Length: 178
Image (cartoon, rainbow, N blue to C red; front, top):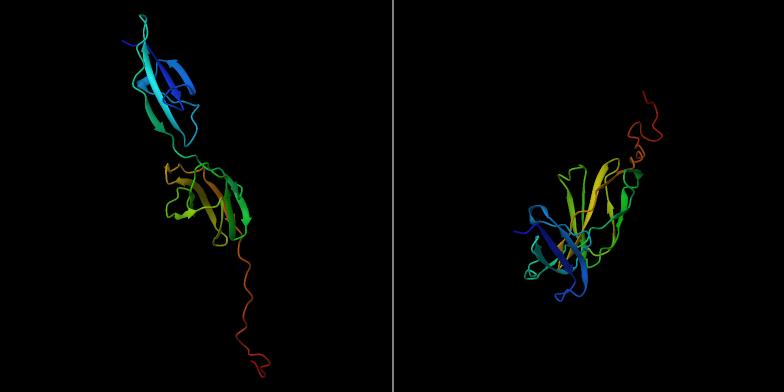
């Protein structure tokens, strides 16, 4: 039986553009390759080794990694006294056709509002005054599908300024008011 495996990953089926070649005793026949990029097609193959020698390469297979995850830019995490009309912004993800924006008054995103189809890397949204919100973004590609959610951030909007009171009584220029 095999005592080690050699895993080779490349950007083409001829393996003349190798990304990584790793030897090891991979637990549960699994290997996490740290050299892979988001949204990229790769080819991989494996050969077994033992004290006698090496096997031939396995049949090569291809796979495509998921689309990347955006990084949030603004507002800053835990920002306070933000205007109730908030510009959310994030980094672009290569290959993304659009982005999904999720926000909620709850850190676990229960009762979230989901805005799909934002094609820019920013969106202005009207929020309630004096409220803490949690928000996150994920990329969408018609080829690669949905990416993972970004790390969540929170912000708190300003408390609304009190409105001007309306005087009901007594009426203007009223006389003999008791």
